[in-house]
Image 1: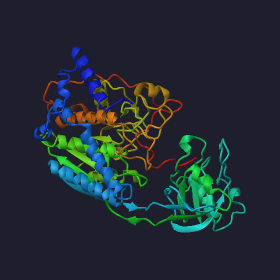
Image 2 (image 1 turned 45 degrees about the horizontal axis):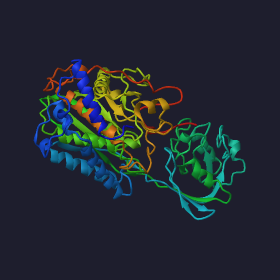
Image 3 (image 1 turned 30 degrees about the vertical axis):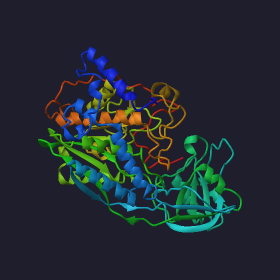
Image 4 (image 1 turned 90 degrees about the vertical axis):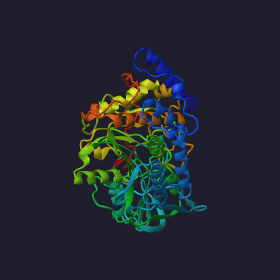
Length: 538
């Protein structure tokens, strides 16, 4: 990583000077990048790139992330949908936006809350509570019983593992016991159904342990070949905890409580423009997972968007700006899906010119990535709406101007932009990585640690205020601000709607091109999905 959060400013100053010589960027260098003193940013209209980039500061973004951390600390350590932590996060965003002068609405949608499970080992030795997660399609119940390992493999290399894949694995299984099953070979649902049919009262599914990426807490879906929810609770565990549960004489307590209806809300904020029929949307999910506070995932995108909203609150845009803080993204993109469905039903989605998505933009072992609309690095598994390539180009031009190398993130449609692109809305966004391991090549370009995940605390309790790369947050906050201001004035390059030019003489260079370190054998890259449903099989 860069040695300090100030390097992006230095790199940008150098890039300005270099590009100015080439006739590409016609702005003053050095002094133009210093933030106004006192209340300057609060008192002026940031209607040029120079003004806005001076005022969108990483310390302002960090203040919002610190507030989200404090909310998580006061509410059981997380801000997950359906919890008081999420409700208080919504309150904070609403109060901040209203104080800045935005028009704010709460957009309610249906949500089924599933409480976190309980996984306790009672014997042998002192009782211990393990981190766990429920599987989609689980049954519900409170079970205490003997733990019976099912054809597990604890000794390396632990590959292949066929635990629970065959009916024969359960010959002699004592009915009413808790089946301990290891990941590997067949679908999770096949393993769980076989256990249920053998008389198991509950299932603990633990990770395979053959690689670092298959050693942590395991969760996923039981649907696939199996299309029917189970009648017994099914919870996940890490390889290490599974090995402890496999000890002779092990007994455990497993609880998966029944879900309950808890309607949730998206926060939708609007800054009216002269053209109210051409709406520029930008969004970030506000909820965390139940395992932790989610300060990178996705306090980073949420906070950057909030800081930008404050700094453009006095703007009189040509196009209407609409920002969204989505709920229940971690539960399956529920908030954004519900919002888009409502817009389609009302016949108003056609007013949305484009959608920008920002999910995880400050990963501690980051690389800079742009959603790959032109499919130069990844073949998209979805139809890429016309206009998305031009959004990618804008972000790439910003990175080029800032002197920052970048690469492609798969345009997978597996984050909050999914519902938009499924309905033909052009989209784009930024991403700094989740659970994929950084390669040696990437470390030579972006710094950081080769062999470690882009975000080692992805979906874990350690995703705290200390789990951020402030230099990446600084660069990306400015990249987001640049895109928002560009489209606030004109979306002509994306959808053909002519607007007006952003005041000033600021120009961006042509994109330098991605580094080409992703979508290669051996890793290096990840779609901006972060595995919401996780693996269905194997």
